[in-house]
Length: 264
Image 1 (cartoon, rainbow, N blue to C red):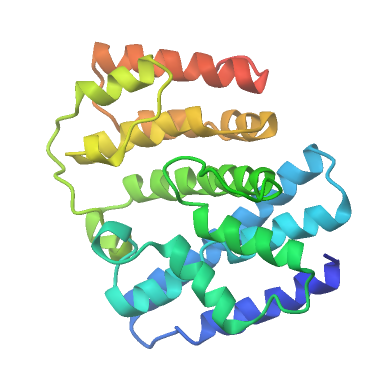
Image 2: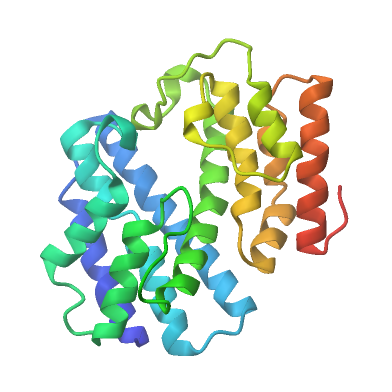
C-alpha cells in the first residue's frame, strides 16, 4: 500500500461521512464525534507504527485500517440513533460489509484487502479471534490498541460533560447510582479483562474500561496510555473507596511496568 492509496481512501471516507450530515444539531454532533475519533485513531496508529519502525507499505496499511475501523458507525447511527451495539448491530461486522459493498479496496492486492476487512470486522471483539490468516493478527492488535487509546479519551471527556450536553448516541442506558461491582474490582486485582456481562452501573462500565489495560498489545501503547494519564482520568470519576484504590494500584503498577515509565 502507498501514500497515494491512503489519500484516495481518505477522500472516499470524507465524502462518505458527508452523506450522513444532517441539519439536526444532535445528529451532527454524533457524526462529528466519530469523524474526530477516526482522526485521533489514525494519529495513534501513526505513533505506534513509527515507534515499531514498520515498513512503509505496512504502515500505510495500518493507517488505512485506522481510517476505516469505525466506518460502520455512520450507518449504525443512521438506522438506530445509537452507538450501542447491543441495542443495534455489531458495528465492526457492519463496517466490513460497508467496505466490501463499496468496493473501495479493489485496487489493492488480495493480501491487503483481506487484512483491512478482517481487522475492521474484529477490531471490537471481546478478545482476539482465532483467524486462519495469521497475517491479520499484528494489524488487528494495532487497531485494537490505537482505538482503545482514543476511546479512553472520549469517555473521560464524556464523564466530565454535564449530562444534558453529552452526545446522545454514546448513552449506555446504565444506572448512575453510586454503586459498583466487587467482581469487576477483582478483575483489576487479578490482571484480568472484565466482561460486559458484569456491567450493572455506570461505575461498573468505568471499571471495565480500566481493565482494558490488560488487553493492550504493544509497549508504545502503554507509554501513550501513561503519558496521557488516562487511567487517572477515569479513576478520578469513581467512588473513592479502599477497595477501588487497591484495584487501581494493581492497574497502575501493571501500566508502569509495561510502559517503562515511573508512576506519577
